[in-house]
Amino acid sequence: MWDIGLTHYLVVSCLVFGIGAMIVMMRRNAVAVLMGVEMILNAAALNFVAFGRLLDARQETGVAGVGQVVGLFIVVAAAAEAAIALAIVLNFFNRYQTINLDEGSELKE
Amino acid sequence: MKSSVSPLFFYAFAIVSVLPGIFVLATRDIVRAAFWLLAALSGFAGLYVLLGADFLAVTQVVVYLGGILILILFGVMLTHRDPVLVKRARRLNIVVPGIAGGVTLAAAAVAAVTRAHFAVQTEPGDPSKALALSPDGLTGTTRTVGTLLVASNEQHVSYLLAFEIASVLLLASLVGAAYLARRGDVPAPRDAQPGPEGA
Image (tube, rainbow over all chains, first blue to last red; front, side, top):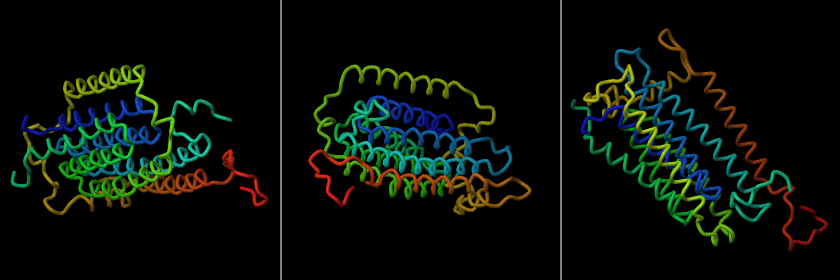
């Protein structure tokens, strides 16, 4: 238990992924759903970084850096996604005066 | 051995990563959910530090805690007066399948990763790998990451094309967000008079 290995990080990642999926499924607030998506993306990034760091040292050099590079790209994708999603949420609120996702069941007025 | 830290740090950061997520799920107040999300993302930054990814940890703090969370708080404030969402109670036909599905998903994933044996995995008892603050002592991994991003040599190819595509993606998404969020052709509220100045 006191020897921290790859599995420990993967378990944390799985738990956060499950919580994020539950947030996406259960919350009806569009901004809260966006928070769940951010947690899912973070769990995926943690997987990449942990695998890159904790692969065997006999592998070629630079593997740890590759995991971090993929993590950086995930952060970039999350930033772009958050900006677009919040713009859509604002538009939705301006049209329907609510951000309850159950109310937005049509594509066109 | 001397560059490793106590496993208590891992467990502390793991708790800080997982537990606030449950509060994000459970709380009714969206502002409180935003601040619990801040705690969860801080825990992830700590885990990145333990994995030797110091540059990614700082990026996490700057982009997530400084950028995305402020953006989310702006979204909360701009859409806060929502009578439908405040009054509506949590319905049982959402809660039960949501919890069942999420717990099943997480349990299946945990069972998979704890049983799997990765062929290239390090030994779990190697403390200099799992909990070292940085692989190269105190030099950090910023140079490694920057070299991987823009410069290729005989050992590896660079990720320059992906880097450029990511920057173009950011530019396009920010332009698209500004286009989507403008108050141009949004239909006027019901009590507004259509004046000659238009919308």
